[in-house]
Image (cartoon, rainbow, N blue to C red; front, side, top):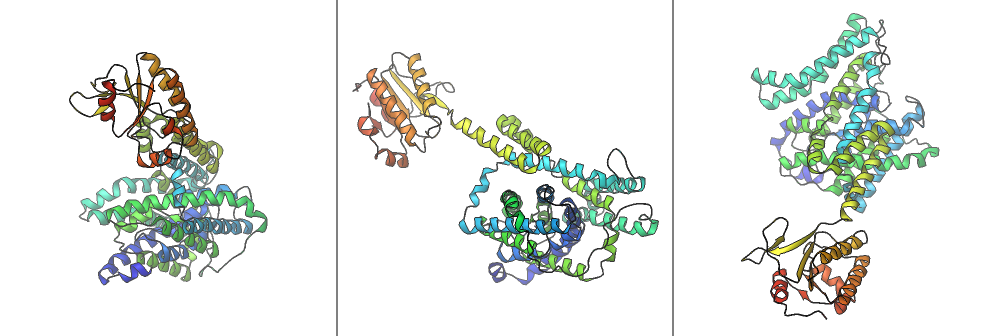
Length: 549
């Protein structure tokens, strides 16, 4: 916070004020709705939107990140706590805060130990599959509230109110911004106006409840919302620490991934630099703040951050203004919040998660890498069939399995020289010349225990296809590391080639690899020579001036 305050200028204030007001208007219905997704009273969503952004502003590095409740994290909270306590019970609320506490501690520890890189094990296809699966689960989970009863039954007044709210929100999402632009508003203002449609719909539906006597007709509302700011609360359940630890680790990583994906996109637009370790600390502090004020796990919201950016946020002061306005909303009379109809809140959730149902990554992966596409589909299917945590584990396991499978079968190219040059290329892709008795093989991966045997088998196959081979050159320009197992495999290959009268030569060995090879016996026992370049090996060996040892 000291950094951005030091560079704060008066000209930045109008943008921060406008962004703070807009996001506050967006947060009231959204926070309450996401609290319902988490299985908590609606007011918990507002509690989780006050202290967390303040603490993030103290430690975080993104000027436009909007921290608070978010659909996916709310779903993960609900799936974690459902087996442990009844939704809405005092124990459930305690466990939600305890989960936020553990997630915050995980994030803080990762930030202080600078191990944010571990989040890289969640590939983009896995994240996309998780998002798609979660969007479907959240949307289906809101159908009973939208209809006022479990499908296929429905409560007519609730279904009408929910259906109309859903239709209005869908129309606003697709048509309101272009309509406002045609009315003369600037594109940025029009886009912000369309984002505030949920607030307008919620206010309109709330006004209809007393006007039409909808509660008497059986339409459910949020009920009484306690007035006043949340109190500090450090209550925990000693019997549930172990049960919450593993989900907290996963939620912590997901909080970081979701937050960074949105913040990085916005930071690039302003040429800002984010510090991942400080982001971890900021998000960890935000979750600790949520835990102490009756909230649940929170993260940076991609949609709200985008609105914050579009509304003119210049610094973290915009988030402080949002938090202050939300606090004022709780200090002021809250009777009107009790009249928010649940069918309309359900409609806002469904429309919000529809934006998460993005198949562009699936289409790209299907064309580019079917293994990644399979991991995406497996993750989405795992979330639907097995639950949130199991779905993520399935996706990560498949991604890592695909990575290991590819690494265990490295691409190996037979090289030839482009006539008249010193360039060597794959003879299957280029019209390149070869020399009798000389075989050039380029290994396009690091050599380790998982692929050493496959490399040796490929070498034997190529030699068997070229019985006149007298010199084999392994071109190691793409090899960044050779582990101990691969070192022994190269030694065995060298010994085998010696018995067959074939020289084994190495070319273009990288410096770090050579540094380690110098501490081994391979170079001394090598049945051939080391060459600085493949061209030098070609010049020497194609003339057959060397003989195998």
